[in-house]
Length: 389
Image 1 (cartoon, rainbow, N blue to C red):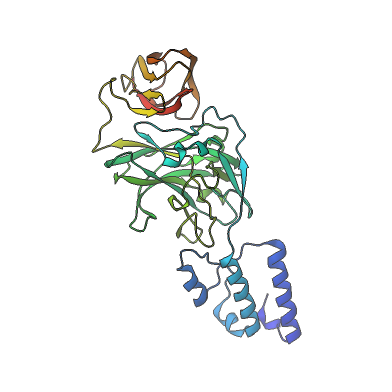
Image 2: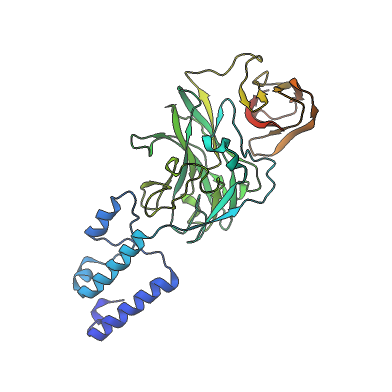
């Protein structure tokens, strides 16, 4: 509207009333207002900058003081408002989901996914629309999870595995995985690597992971962030969200998001989601300082009464052997997946206590990386191997 037509106090007040009602009725996304007050607020980590329509400077100068005060009042309200979410249980088939898993060897996740509380994944939706852990009405760009190495050392994350819980496909935009080092203040720092984009339509939301290979990752020491970039889903009208634990199962200071203003914020604090969760995001790590076990006698990982040894040979050609140990008799299921998350091999049966070995024919499998899960009454373990012809 041309401000020159505001020629009477009554017209000014009517326009103010109209704008105020429109903001609250439609819950429109406010564009950033260029004022020194709001620029100062943006610097506070726990406050979200409200966004207002940009007016030309000469028009701003011609506005009545009461108009400015009204818009500043709305801005302060928007800044201080806590983000709101709803927890929706994930009800799809979880056969491919590593809930309550202690990952093994080079496939790592946040420690919270080891806890019993991680057995019931959640997809958080945003009251403002979309997903807390992905595309939403706030315009969030990235979501990342802090991951620790099991012992001190140097590594590089060459692949990110993500369990998505929901999506909506319109123009079929893309998402990609990112890996960051950890900055001095605990936030995501330098970018260490990123994957090629993957179309939203190709991302699984039924309990299988979506793999994002990282071609040339830089190394990190002890800890790193792994996550997703959903910025390209907004122009195409798509949305997608990552599965997580429920609130109280995880540490919100270890989950970070990049807001629409390009600034990183943790999941806890004033003006944030205030959720203590962990994302179902895994990083596949190549070790530099600490090497994996070299023989089948060495345990690669232990979870309760289940022990997993390295696959042999790795890389495999015609055949690969999966070796594991059981502390007591148990029903066991071995499942293998390709990089698209599709099941390529599955075996189940009752086994006695002791060391077990299952040989799998791989001569007809395409070369590439494969993932396998050993699940028994005493625990679940997850790892990967290569097939090379």
